[in-house]
Amino acid sequence: MNTKNMRRINLIVKTSIFLIVMIFFHLFADNTKSATYISTYDAIDVCTRADMDWINFCNGLMQGYADVIYELDPSCIPDGTTRTQLSDIFTGPAVYNTESYKYNKSAFSAALEVFMYTFDCSLY
Image 1: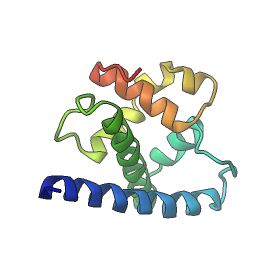
Image 2: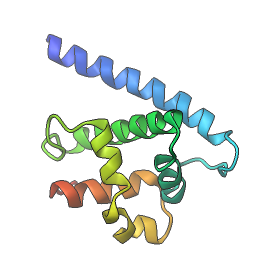
Image 3: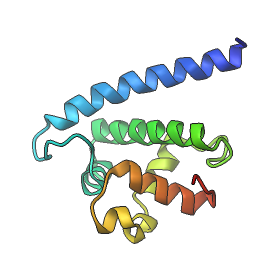
Image 4: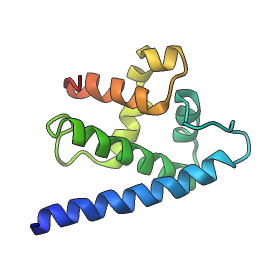
């Protein structure tokens, strides 16, 4: 396996571990509901808080979603797109026009819709 693939696998493993830990804390945090997924409303709530811990959580969450989207279509999200940019896109005006927001589906569904719209890609 080449070095580039090893770095990518290492990043995915580290991101996954980070997300699992952060989701655990999120599920037991005050003023959030307990569920098996993070809803669009909850994700927007935590991603718009002016608290560095929640900003870092949101950036990691969006990176995790971007990693999954990359596996579905490597050309969807342009190289060099930062976690902060992904978070800003997710909490921007486009999210309020998604089916995921309308019906408070999972935040991952909302991220798929918003990123597909923003980056003009098709994952289906």
